[in-house]
Length: 143
Image 1 (tube, rainbow, N blue to C red):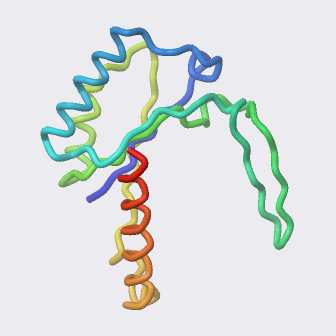
Image 2: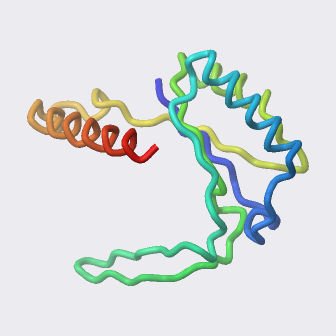
């Protein structure tokens, strides 16, 4: 089972306050433990919302809204993508994360191909596999 672990923004992350060297080291050690356990698939921190944009869809109309966005507690400051056996396993790993000070982190299961049933035809599955393989190849060249 894949899960997306969403680290919620707070006043500091939205103000662009960077983590201390100590927290970066603790997070590096945590990420290393996740990697060694075979759980970590991806993870990144995000810039504050004042550097982002939202696109609203209304029929064929598209409206772009530049950041910052008002509801800090609803924003995401970073994420991980994990491969775990269960939601309980993800919770147990997350409890070990080096957070304090009222941080809130959300864990959400990622849809698997089987979740879409017959609507996700073999042709659509093949297309998805091809597209994501190409994206992974590009990502590997960049890093």
